[in-house]
Every structure is written in C-alpha cells, then in structure tokens.
Length: 290
Image (cartoon, rainbow, N blue to C red):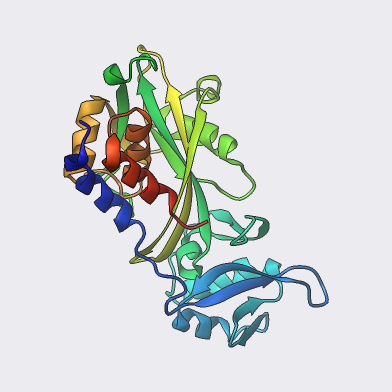
C-alpha cells in the first residue's frame, strides 16, 4: 500500500478541508476582555453582511479594523437574534469561544453560530481499533454509519466516536460522554483512549467558515466488544480491515469529510503510506491553521 501512486487520492481530502483563504472578504471579529477598555481578543472572521447585521447592536463597535463585541456576556443573545432573522441555524448547544492564538476561553456561543462568526470549534475523533498494536497489518477498525436524518453528511461513514467539545467540558470528558452516547462504550474502557494528534483546518462550507481543531485518539477495544448506538446519531457499526478502510478513503468520498484527515493520520502512523508520498501527506496535515 506504500508508494506515490496512493498519494493523490488522499491529498484531495486534505486540500478539501483547507479551502478558506483568510481574511479574504471577511473582517476580524474581536471580543473585549476586562472592563474599561480592556484588551480586544481576536476570535473569528465575519462576512460583510454579518458584520453589518451586528453593527445594529449597542454592544458592537465597528471600524476599519473589524467588529468588536464590548460585552462577552451578550454574545449568546446576539447569536439568537441572528438566528431569528434566518442568518444562522440554531443548534441549542453552547460551545466555548477561544482566542485565535492561545485558545483562551473568553465567551460562549451556540454551536450553530460558530461557522457564521468564523469561530473555531474543538472536536474529538476516536479510532476504535481491534487487534495487536504490534501487528498493524492485522488491525481492524470499527466504522460507524451516520444516521440518514443527520443535517451534516447523512449516511456517510464516521468514527466509532466523534463529536464537538461543548462549553464547560474538556476533550477527555467529551470523549467519555460521547463514547457512551454514540457507541455504548463504558467509561472505564473509553478512559483508555490515547491521544495521538491534533489536526486543524479552515474550510468554506455552505453553513459558513469551519475552523476546527480535531483531537485524535486511538482506543483499542476487546475482540468481544460490540458497539451499540444509543442517541440515534449512528445507524450502526461495522468492523472493517484496515485494507478496506484504506481503499475506501483513497478511492471514494464515503466518509464524512473531516474523518478522512484523522484516518490519513492513522495510515501514516501505521506505516501504510511511506516514502515521499507519506512525507507530503504528513506535511499537508500539519500545515493547518493554528
């Protein structure tokens, strides 16, 4: 499976997740920290129509340097107002807002507003592996099929566990929560997941600008364990050989768009893509936005 002939099929997935050119047509979105004119922290990017809509609110200062929210606590209400105008899809789940650099939490906002405000989201993705880690050629991977009623990529293949990090939780806490909800994985087993990578990208999507940081984990599950969906987000699970997963990622778009990145990272770590092709893919994965 090594060699340059396998590289183009994988590279297209990485390039598809790096379509945003920032700032481009967008203006900076900042949040003021502290009282009495504290430091303005950059947190996102706004298209002109959204910047103009926000300029109507008293908590907003607009200027050539961008748009600044003077009261962080007002952000959820502003997002709700834009949702009521049909400018974003309300999800009813709060996410933390982090600074562009340093990833300091400065506010909260509804998940559906993140791409419209160009705010970064944190997520967890788990490779559910079966087999001996010393024999990578014999490993198998649990693959989930997304429910047909999912708003994003319905019916596509996904990880055994994957989800956004909601406000107030860390990556490990989110992993354990999602593992039970999505795959009925008990907490004591989910806690054995090992962090292996953090992948970032910025891409243009119909819903807006997606700036995601994916915290990737490997979790070896026992041969006798069978995942079962609990929350309705997954239609079912299948146990595949790594060869099956490799070929499907390389040759098709059957997996959810960002799952491909995490699987390419797995292929590289297992030595399934080597040489110049592997080095190019590793560089492409690591050159995402901070």
